[in-house]
Length: 314
Image 1 (cartoon, one colour):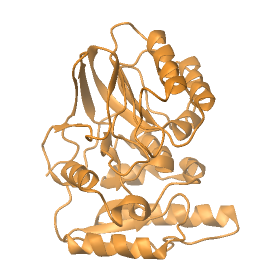
Image 2 (cartoon, one colour; image 1 turned 90 degrees about the vertical axis):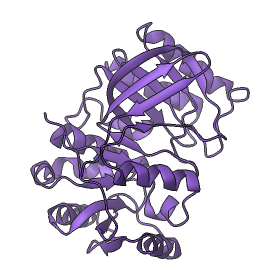
Image 3 (cartoon, one colour; image 1 turned 180 degrees about the vertical axis):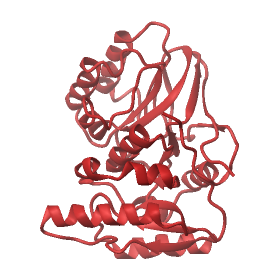
C-alpha cells in the first residue's frame, strides 16, 4: 500500500476538532486550547457532536463516526485535532470509511486511546498520522518542548526530524545497534488490543515505540508477552520504550519495569537496538511521532539518535 503524506498546516488553515474517545468535563481547558490555536494564526471548526455525551453507545458511536467522516470530507479542513484520550475509539474501527480517508488525506493528531485510530488508518489507508498533543490535555497550555516539536512536525514540510529527548528524561540504552523501518508507536494497552485484527499495521521490520500510563509492571509484562506471542515484536528493527508514568522514568528506582524491558530485549534479534526513557507518553514534555513515516535508530552506549523522514508535504 502506498504511503500517503498529508499536506503541512499553514497559518490561516482551518483545524477541525473531533472527540472520538472520551468527552472532557473541562470546558475551560477546551476554550483555552481554541484561543491558543487562534492566537497563533489558525481557524478552528468544531465537529457537530464535538464533546457531546450520550447514554446509548450505539448513538454515541454514530455521532463520532459522523464527525470523523465529515471532517475528512470537508475540503476546507486541513487538519483534524482530537479532544482527548480515554476510551471508545476501538469501537469505531469496523465502520470507518477508510476509502474516504485515502481520498482526502490530511493531518490527524492525537495519542493515548487515539492510538487505535492512528494505527487503523495507517493500516487501511496508508495515511501518516501524528501521535501528539490534544486539546484538553496539552494544547490548552503546551510546554515549550511539546509546542516546538508538534508544530515543527506538522507544519515544516520536506524536513527530516530528530527525536531529541527532553533534558528531564534520562535515556537507557538496553542494547546498542542500528535499525531502520516504518515507525509504529502508541499506547501499549490500546495497541495490544489491535493484535490479530485487520487494523494492526505490519510490524515486520518496523521501529516500535510503546508508552503507557500507571500500569503495574505485571500488566506491562502481560501486554508485551501478548505482542511477542502474536509475532509482532520478534522481528522488528528497533524497540523503544517511552514513559510509563507522568513523572520521568528513573532507572534506579523502577527496577521491576526495567527488568521487563531487559527480558524482551533478550527475546528479539541480537542486532536490534533497544532503548528506554524516550520523551513520549502521558507527560508534560512530549515529542510528536509520525506514525507510518520511515525511522532510523543509531544507538551506542553513549548516545541515541532517532530520526524520521518528512511527515508532511507542501
